[in-house]
Length: 592
Image 1 (cartoon, helix red, strand yellow):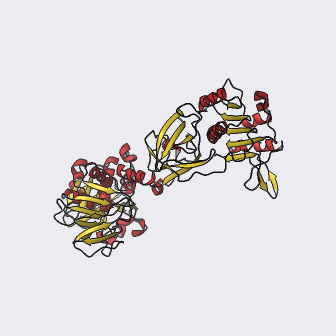
Image 2 (cartoon, helix red, strand yellow):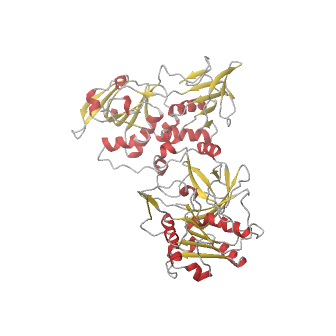
Image 3 (cartoon, rainbow, N blue to C red):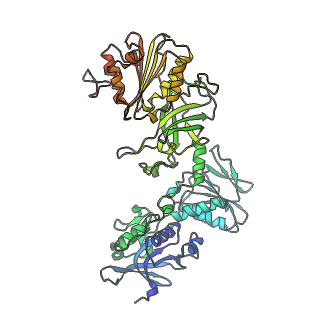
């Protein structure tokens, strides 16, 4: 019978970054007796022993894991873990030891030199420049070991997703960066290692990264899971479901549980200790922010413009201006450009993006029609078609069970001076090209932020001296949803041929009236004395597809949607859709 000091809730084999993460996670979940068994003389991050009050047995190699005596309740067997120095009884066992592959070689050209090593650190590294190449926990372990030895370390971790590191490795890497004990290149990996005057030279094709000459290079291989036979795991012990392996499930028999070190600690507690009331994880563990170093490199790589204005009409509606790095961006009124932010940016809501772990270093892009500030800094009509900034009118899209928007919940947290992605091209055929008669009636109909391209078009017509009637009607929910209302009022006061008709549908003192109602009831003739006839009128539509109401051709027959849209109402009056090869006087932009 083992003495009480040899009985543990959980025994962890291997003081790796993953093993330490399991230990810390288990202790924070409510387990009281957790022992780490390490065959070497040191664990991955020795400083965590004191910080987290970890119980570690050094120089102990596990020879067998088998089923031992029953526990106090008599219904759950204890596991017997035998090392060359001690025997343990445990309610659960975690194998966190990782094996360095003997035949692993770097995938890039590498010279045969004792200054280029795999999976081991050179001796006497104090005051030396060492390059570590790798993107896993193991690379962080080597980096920490070299930094502790006094080396100046650069970790080339191209493709590293810090979120996939174990919490122990994640926290240590943050500390190394914070203390400037290591420089981490999250987006760069050398393409070749050469020798110059006997010292390694790392060559980078990536133009953002200069070539580096260092005193030594250490490659971190992708280590493999320990084979069950290497720790003497019996079939009986494996069958209990109380022995876990850290790593890929394909590396062990099907009946042996596996998992990542940053969650399996709580999984073990839940399975092996069903009566335990799991303590809630701290928010810093529950939602771990990504490394600022990685975010900085991703922003530098992808962002090519700066937000110069971010003016909320209210919390969910903004006018913003963006200045591209390359200077002026010419465009035609009505065209669109794409904006983008990375999945690595914070969201304003608590929604979780689908497949975030696979996409966290990618850009979210969406096209937005270019709006117009209407008046320049001197009070004249603005001419932004060739300016150094582009203006956009954007609404926050809330998450729903069917859709988790990616861009606007991140854009909501931005402010002037922040960086952003701006697509290299401005495009779109929704322009004023069809309006060649300066006396024609031009009718702009929109919903919500669909008025953005119309703002630019209205300014362009007035700036060029259009004398025919110009009407812009906008349907929104509330008065607060009209971000350009005061600018339109100024335009009306200056130009007798311009009329603005806002239509809030959810204000108690305003009769509910949609864009279709305005067309059907001839509101434009009634209010402004402007006849809307097919012979002299161009109609521009942007916004809710239900408002536009485009027809579809089914079995050779043109069918309109069940909900009557503006297109159907106008075609009944002789208007025709403007198609790519068939000009008409109904022009549309499907904004949603």
